[in-house]
Image (cartoon, rainbow, N blue to C red; front, side, top):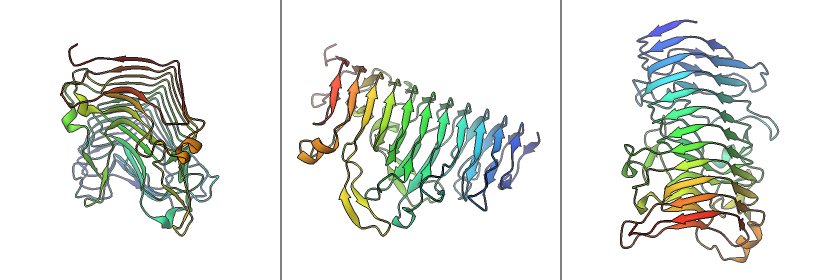
Length: 360
């Protein structure tokens, strides 16, 4: 392992290089900026056992150094494991926007057993152009990490760009702890979001949390609106199982949702030229065995037009079962709260809901 200190730019720009057991402090940009010349490389590279402190001191002026680990072309076949990240003015893992060629190719990007504290965000994957819809980003794995005060994990397919089979697909996000940070998975098919903890402290405060706009790293003029939910997940064939999502119990009704899945949030299916082919609804979603506490609205599965025949038809296969929901009390005269909202076509069973009122 090597030691790096006070580097005034990107610390390392590498291609298919394993970086292990290094220490770094006070870096203007990324610890490692990874760029791969081809998507066909099969060798796995490891970023492992490193301890990184005070990275991204020049962000956003350094633009594309948006992560302690920044990915550029073809972010595949990397395993980022057993690292410690402390204090960064940018994201932990940067911007995963590049694609793999072909619908069946996995990115084989693994982020496992890392610990991070005090960053602007965790990771962002974002598509806004129909020009890239023939490309897929498949098989991302984020497991067994702990993120404390690290902002948000965001995957966002821009509204109206969903394509059959999913641009983002087959993500496994399991066994993680998110403290004072949210998760947005918009337009991801086949996601497994299991056995995670999303926790919010009293110090975090809901006014800095909900309804804010999150800066798009590296492109300071672009912003992404984030729905007021701890977990916002929209896609087909999703499993959200065994998670604990808790907010500090004195929040008022502006805290809104613990889990929000929008059954018709995917919009029209597109072909590669961007033309509408059919209207697409979320379907085959399992939300089970979760504990959701401290929110005014525990689990929601609908937004607008929820009674239309198309929604009933397309949401068949969505199951909400064996969840425990403890709503926070509403503190305002106009505030409202509910445990679980169920779109027509969904099946809800064996859930437990405890709802406080304004006087308790």
